[in-house]
Length: 390
Image 1 (cartoon, one colour):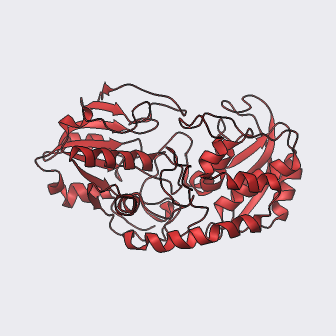
Image 2 (spheres, rainbow, N blue to C red; image 1 turned 120 degrees about the vertical axis):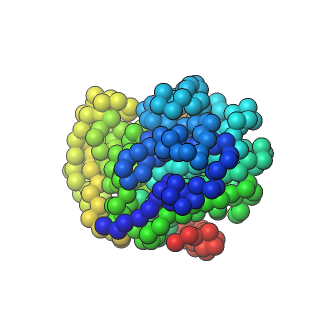
Image 3 (cartoon, rainbow, N blue to C red; image 1 turned 90 degrees about the horizontal axis):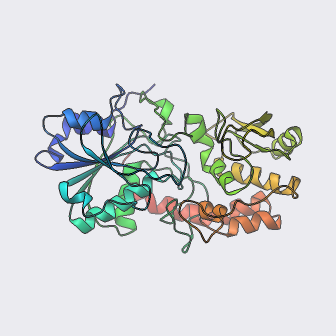
């Protein structure tokens, strides 16, 4: 177990001058805590040198108020701090000039999970854009990438496929911390706000979250564990199909299936592929909400046996391809909308391209799929180098 200091803790202990004398807006969520489980909003409101004047909540809210996608909540006064809190997940997805009137510096303290489609990083990007337009400073407090900062996997998001789950051409597994992403977004993709990042101390990029002594708090309701985050870069694509990604179970994204599948046939088919670092166990389940609610589904549970060799993105593709190939009569793509996109198939929105769906439909091999990613992965790995903090 490696001791680290989170960006939040470094700010409060050593860098409070960044906020002294300023009116502070804070973008935070349930995982915005220190090692003692104290929430950033509470710490800011009690700090003698910090004038907290506004709170902003991403998807699922500041303290975990909402469960599902496409749920909006109105502004309210936070009961613990008395500060006005605004939603950045609804019709308004970035701070408006009116919201920023009481703010001089916007602080971002969000736990990311290392996957392109997680909305929190785009809440940050949109807030950075708004801050640039309103001439406000931005301070991003760093937190670990739960699935390590080394692995890069998947296609780059293609032009024309931008959305709230993919604004920039980065791969599905990007291998960056949220502060490194802020630097990349700001410079490489032209946001150009006045940005300061507060790095962690004691952190190394090869660390997984549970290699550190930081406390895991669910950043969103269906990200309960590091294990869920580990498989998420591939299993999130199941959201773009009609079969279950395990929402409504105790192991979302680790469990997947449908009423029409054969659990043992599917598991054997997938294990025969000999994908690195993963075993598929036959599993049946009844989701308590979302797809196939209360229906008996048959599928698999993913057991990562070696996370250093495990390739989550191609593993997710392999599962979707297997469901498509083995059960063509039952397999269907999910229909719009998805994350406020009404004119594209959700799978294409998540994948950041139509090509991957077309490869699956045409029977392309997994080797052909991974080969098609290689140039983009190499380009991104080189491009991100100058933005690394660790």
